[in-house]
Image 1: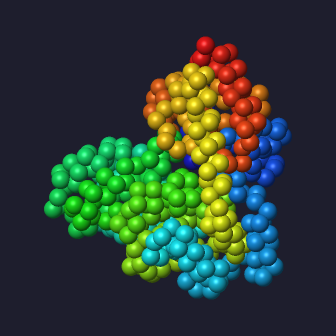
Image 2: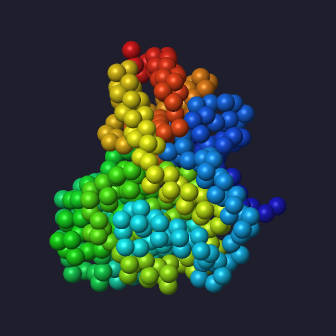
Image 3: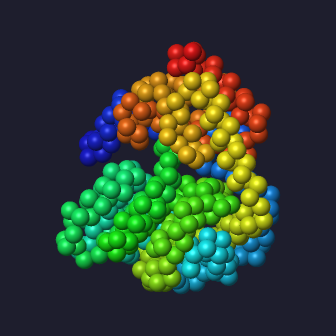
Length: 394
Ligand SMILES: *Cc1c(COP(=O)(O)O)cnc(C)c1O
């Protein structure tokens, strides 16, 4: 009997013992305010479908028409035979929407980070990275071989200190921060981070995956929110969250975007996004340009839910976006809370260490424009009942 793969079982048991094993639930409905989760209908507070666009009829129709015209598969990578008119149109439209010079699209936000960071910095260079940056930034940074220096979360003065401590030790430097941090729903102080980066003439990149379609005028993103147009060199975004489809965005300085068509490895070596998805993204931009109604409703839902939860006595942390963490303390309590909610027909995930710091385990409530007031009231009742049962609130 071979034993060379035994370590995997041991690792898996270790994860289960530590309560860190991911149990994967299965959906059998479209995304929306409600989901069928493992066969049970439940109110959905787990998706990044902020604007409720993932099952939007106009977007579905656009995707169907693109399938009729282009078929289902891209056939090639973007640089060989995989680019269709729709890709070019999407890049023009998203750049115009966000008010940047140019944009390039990738298969996902994860790919966009893996493409961009190694294209901008290498072995002789340095990356200053917020300590809570997303996994795809961390992986992109490691892939670049640049030296990685972390700065304290959302702290521009610590960034300055780290830059000062490393002056003269590198060829090029890149500052990277998430725009909206998805665990706490807080926003990076991008204006202050820009001032510091600019003072030292360092490249600045922001990953706005959770801000795209959410923050800024009508969802135009964090650069718009801080009115830093033309100042932030490169902005990463995703079509997979608020836009309700799939795909990554890199927007900003024209030279960087052109460089990525030559050196962005997922662009060169992984097949293009299918035309149907691209067409759906274009229809999403149409919707966002026509009206701010969905973005407004998302924020209104966030305000309502947060203020009602505070009235009930819950700790909703430091969020300034519709992401609403409900901080409970120990991971075991958060997991039990999540299970009890699910019994009551509310689907909301528990997050514990190492995703969030020890003692800060929480339920993360992802609000959406798709939720009606009745949906929110029903969820509030469930939170109140479970909170009292588990002695979290009085
Ligand atoms: C979700 C997320 C990504 C990945 O985006 P996908 O399009 O889902 O691959 C990248 N960065 C951040 C900050 C994210 O939150």
